[in-house]
Length: 439
Image 1: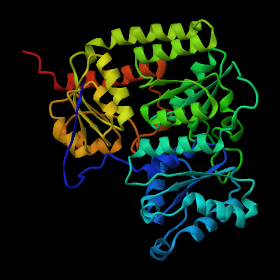
Image 2: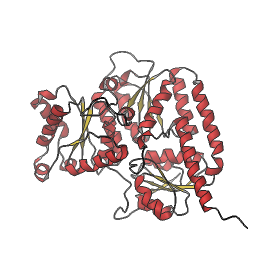
Image 3: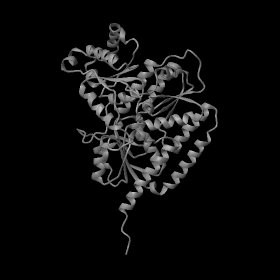
Image 4: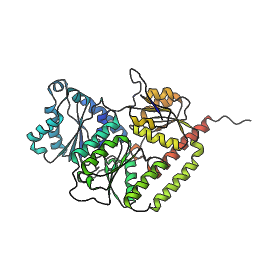
């Protein structure tokens, strides 16, 4: 069991953590025809927008209520109202996802009350779903903001099932660290059992890098309102990551749909657990193509054994992502010399490391000496250069490489990709540091 410690520094030297509003905005990007709206200052929105544009290299619909010094003191009702009306008139979204920030939360505004007043004043908003998520910057990080936004979607959009269960429908609550490629891979696995997955959120339809046939003011795709409202008809909810437990429990309380929680879907053991759950839910045998993929993964693990076994890695990621990566690395025989994360959560005790540090990338650099590999997002490149240790980029943001949205690291096929790419990095490092042959 890992010991959880805090770095105790007075300031962050190389930040790892991202804000909860940013996580919530990313979650709303997975809804069809949605416009995320940050209720706060322009600077908060501009910073989040830059990170998302650099990571996905796509047009990102994101708006702000543009709070200033005066409205912060007097209250943001008028700003929120004007922003909602303007967005409705110009972008015509089906959903507006309203995310609170530290600025407006610190003042202590009555956000649900403000929305009721706005609904009464503005009948033109009647055809637009307004989803309010409380995501102050001072509470949690990116994955917490994501989880709170998805929970708000379920509370405010899912309807109690008027009809019975659909035996072929399964909900999948995707975690914040899933790429659009990961989401698409999980959908393919679920569909292989003859089931219809309702992904929430579904970034594979909105941020997968496709070119639209026409300009759209809101998101270019994602989970539809109709599918969200009908999630109560599913026979099972598959949930990945502890930060999605809130959403799964909210859905269960509202509709009675049971859920299965997975720490991650990377690695042989984790992938087997998903396949077993789907075989049980569908009542069908495991398809031959998935059996073949499993066989390929086992062979890849054998091929990569000498590259991985006995190696040491330093990992910095959001808590649930850290646990998923750490469990897979342990499965491959890699020890975690350093494990760094953003917030203190009880589940971090399950990370396969001696200790987990709640800190930043400065803590990663200080503890990674002698490691063979660093795993974190693109801001870890400076530490990689200074330490002379190769960096494998994971998480958000990845702004110095192309194709971040298309990376797949889940299921049998995604795990194979990780094994081959990292094994090649480790092999190249071994060759580079090998002693010259005797003459």
